[in-house]
Image (cartoon, rainbow, N blue to C red; front, side, top):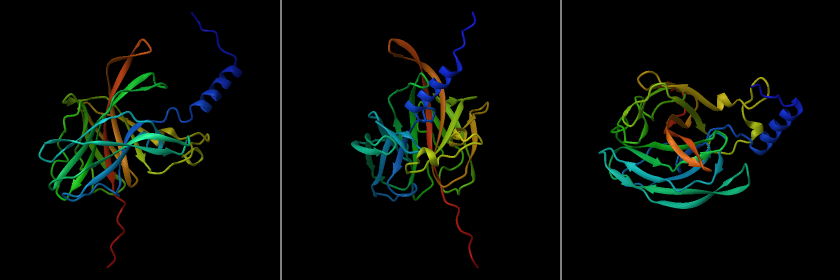
Length: 277
């Protein structure tokens, strides 16, 4: 049976209302780990500190975060639990104070540590889906040991390119795993964290004057063996996220798909200045 078309004026009005109520609704949400020093390098017994929030990394739009579970995987494969302190962070887009968290960890010895998160499911209304995130971020402590090892997350990106010590413009490669097996043909999203609020009028625009969302949140797919390759073209932190649908969860009495995302935060160095003779 053919659907009766709505009058054009009603369609336009609906679009404008949606845009007004949900600015940037299609922008990607991520779990953001924010080290309180530049980069990802530390020293043994020196306390490393992070702030954590849930929101849009590129624009630094912040929403209330649900309490996550954090732990650190050491270079020796040990799992250290990490405590959280609830804090509030200002969201400049809304003018509201948002629930976030602060955490601290003191690495005992040299090596590569992964700060890991297992988040509760978040219902994403515009997608009509739950997102459940499994996230990790490197912390390098004076010795290159352990960066290429999986940490045992349900969905995980295992780097083949070391996730630190590369300048902007470098090519990055990783393998996606789901329950320990290669995740083939899976969608991947990539987004940069700027670390400051980017208002809508400062976002990159396309030829039509619209927000260039494909440029803000870049996408690709894993190959037949779960590998992905991308170029990270600016210095700072980037999140790479692979997703797979797995099961359902009830929302308002209806079974709703759950997408599980394996996220990896990668630090890209500024390009060094040329040496002078």
